Image (cartoon, rainbow, N blue to C red; front, side, top):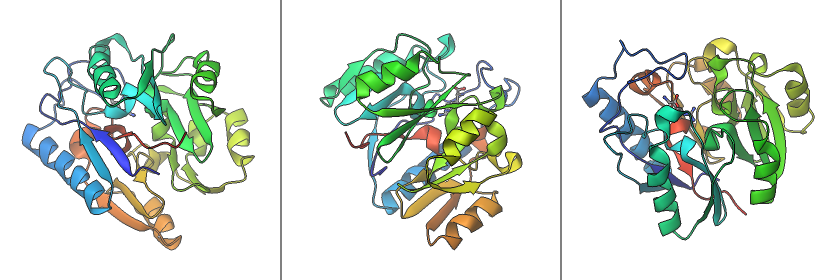
Length: 264
Ligand code: ARG
């Protein structure tokens, strides 16, 4: 899992609007620091043996570094994201790239945050809704991707995408922030029979769960020692990286990598 990722770059990364509670137009990323941060993340993917594909960012797309929201890819099919209007210009770039790679793309008929709200977990697709993804996308994803969908409702804009509230560690292990999900969704998650790691709202709010794991190496943000420790205790290789500039856009490591190898 996560052995092939699509990334972009920070060349045009800015906070031009506020579409999540972490964004403040008066707090802009420092361009050089942001570029260094992103390069270190890409280097960590490569060092972990992952293949990285690259799509250059477009000048009118200040959030394009967050490739995860562009689509959810499974096998040779993808459902494109349908983000807030501020980010709509990104989608044709990704659509063209995916099509060029031989992936059949389907447009989302309702709001959909792409992989930001749709995490592959073994044969299941964990789908966040209630914020950036319309509940009506649940049957659409199940049908278009022929995959069993597990709906998880996130409770506030602080968890505007599921990838801030849940992190997939391996085929059998999930990390999650209980407070970020409603009671029914917590029960659903607990009923999956997975090994569950609980993460505090404090660490989750620092993008602790916004990680990329291939089941062996976990690439995650620096500054969340409790989750990092729990993962090491489970025998995982943990690489902690700075994400202070990406955080100004309300994103982290998971947001900057669209997975291309979710098995069909
Ligand atoms: N500024 C971006 C937005 O609000 C951040 C997206 C982060 N992506 C994610 N998968 N959580 O849309």
